[in-house]
Amino acid sequence: MKKLLIIYPNWVPSNAVGVQRVRLITNYLHQFGWEPTILTVNSKFYEEETSSDLIKIANPNIKVEYVDAKKSSKIRLYGDIALRAFGNLKRKAIEIVKEQNIDFIWTPIPPFYTALIARSVHDATGVPYAIDYIDPWVHEFPGSNNLFSRAKLATLVANILEPIAVKKVSVFTGVSEAYFLPVLKRNPKLKDVAFCGMPYGFDSNDYKVKPDNTELMWDGRDEVIPFVYAGAFLPNAHYFLNTLFEIISELRKSGELDNRIRFYFVGTSYTSLKSIQDYANENGIEDIVTENRERISYLEVLNNLSCAAGVLAIGSTEPHYTASKIFQSVLSSKPVFAVFHHLSTVVKILKDTNADQYLVKYIDSESKEQLRKKMKNSFISFINTSKGWHPRFEALDQYSAKNSAKALASVLNSKLIN
Image 1 (tube, rainbow, N blue to C red):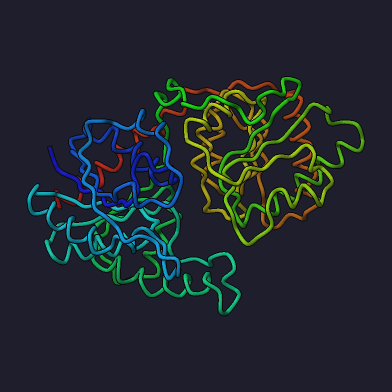
Image 2: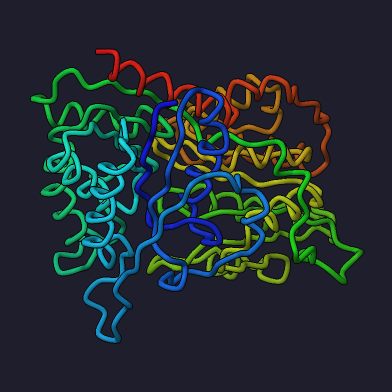
């Protein structure tokens, strides 16, 4: 059994998005000849909400090592947990590598600074490392057009630090190849780097576990027809969302929208940009739209999606964007209204599973009126489920967490053989 050290500063009961990436893959790595050890930070140092639900769906046999972190100060110079625990994670990682004869290091990013830790541990021990791109590191952070903003600083720092972190990398993985292939182009001196795209995937066993809190967002309102969106509200999703709300407003005024329909958005997070509620207010539909920016537990999300009348999956105008939540959406067994760039991998996933009845494919060259027409036609069918909903769930197997674990094991093996 080969040994893999995973450096990721959050772990259950943390409700951070990346925890699901690590959990889903580590649950299956043993089946492909790899024994994972997770190096993380003690949960008492987490700033985000925790959820005891997640303990129910994490493999209890996985070895987990914990370190402490600096507490966030009132004068907030930095809050990133990878920075607050940087030294401790690095020292403990070197110790684990030497004591356990680790064969490979794998670190998902963000948080991005763990990639620098992996590089440092490699320099100290010679053990190869892999970086997993959950999100691109070098990109224009929202608000970076403001010269003196934190976002501008983050963009500059990313351009400086990424080349250092990847200089000696052996493997790139990511939820989509489009997230790490630009890294190879930006760093042409990188040689003999293996890479593999693998989605978040899903574990069908998750749907058999009930959350501690089974209350739905519309509890006590039996008369409503609820449609749910769960997940972050991305900067490049604003165009789609505003267009959708314009359509909903128009349908309501013309009497084509059932007055029992309600829209619930959860886990949309806080940004300096407009909120979903802002767009609802502007379009005069604030009374039928409810936004909860706070994240709820993963199992609570699954429960709400499964009990909804339909699911909204609003993507991005960027072609490389892939949404892990598309698996949750389809597996809810409820109709999914989706808007994504026509080159997004989500389009293929929905087509493969016969779940594209209400898919709207965005094309860069089309006008807003063309997009609006497509969205309106698809949305009317969606709220009336006129096209039915008969996905081929078995076709999702190729995107399962088990398959992602297999892909990770395979690409790591390829470098050890070489």
